[in-house]
Amino acid sequence: MTVVIEYPEWDDAVAGLVRKIERLDISFMGRTDDSTVNIGIFDIYYIENVERKMFLYTKEQVYRLDGSMPELEKGIAETSLVRISRTCIMNTDHLREIRQIRNSHLEAVMDNDEKLIVSRKYLPDIKKMFKKGRV
Image (tube, rainbow, N blue to C red; front, side, top):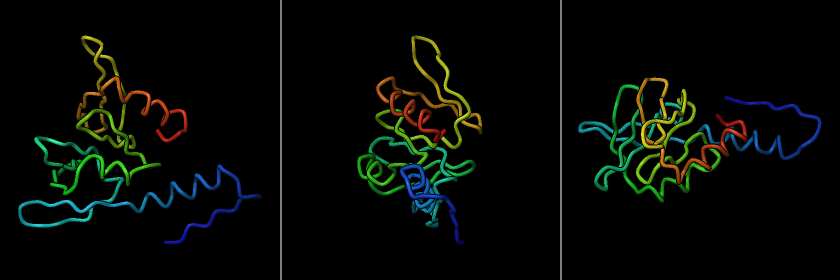
C-alpha cells in the first residue's frame, strides 16, 4: 500500500503524521500452544504482565509474548499504546471511556466492555495522548 500526503510545506504536523503512519506497521509475534501469529497494533486491546509472563489480548484471543514491559515500551512510542499501570499497557484505539470508581480508583472501559484498572501514576500519560489528539 502507498500513502500520498500532499501538504504545502513540511512542518512538525506533517512529520508527526508520517511518524504515526509508520507506527501503524508495528506488529508483535504472539504465541498460542500450537501456533505463532503476527498481530498488528490495531488488533491489540491490551498487554499485561502476569507473574513475569507477558500476555497480549485481542478481541477474541490471548497470546503469549516474549520480552518484558521495559523492552516493549521502547518500541511503542508515538503509537496508540500507553502504559496504564505497572503491569498493563492499553491500546487507546479501543478505549471507550475512563471513569472513576470506588476509593478514587480509575477504570478504563474498552469497546469490547473489558475493564482495566488505571493507576493514577500513569494518568498524565493518558491525558497527554488526549491532548495530542491520539485518542
